[in-house]
Amino acid sequence: MNNKLKNMLKKEVRAMYRYKRIIIASLTILLLLTFYLFKDSTTPLKIITFIGVLIAFYLWDHLFDIRFSIKHYTFIIIIGIGGILLSHLYFVHPNYDKIQHLIFPMLLSSMIFHMANKLKLDFKWKLFFTFATVGMILGSFEIGEYLLDRLFDLKLQGVYLRDLHGFEKFNLLQSPIDDTIVDLSFGLFGSGIYAVYNLISHKLRTNKEKAQSL
Image (cartoon, rainbow, N blue to C red):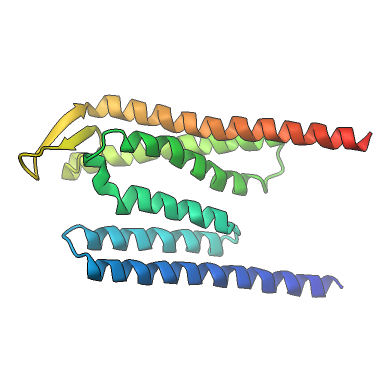
């Protein structure tokens, strides 16, 4: 009986990863078709980076047998589209980056908690581990932006708007240091919202189960 259950579980896992491969392959074909129809100077790099992120996420999932759900694949696709494919909006809408730094950490927290939930820890410590890990990722991301700006002047830190009088001209709306602090604050706030919401939901669920057992 145990062997049958193990074989059934293995088949389900294989089917799950096969389904994920189909999703990534379909998105890749769609993006390549989009590139063919709407060519510009930055599209190839964006598409290659986006596909690379999806493949890296799948390999991380598969090689370490994390078993992310389709929900988490949807989250990484949303992050990839918002952060990579629509990156030109950073220089069009000044609040676009701030919205990302609030929402994306919530999605990232869900992925980290999925892994932390497998640890033998109390629920509150799993949430704390998730919050701390997301905070570390946010800090590392800001350091990476700083280094890329120093090396290539990509204007990743700071809020810039494209000047209507020149495609390569930018108007600085917020200094890099202010932008970094605000981004980190929004990111930690977003991760905190995820932690508090799940903590409250867990307590309500636990109290309900206790009441039903009486």
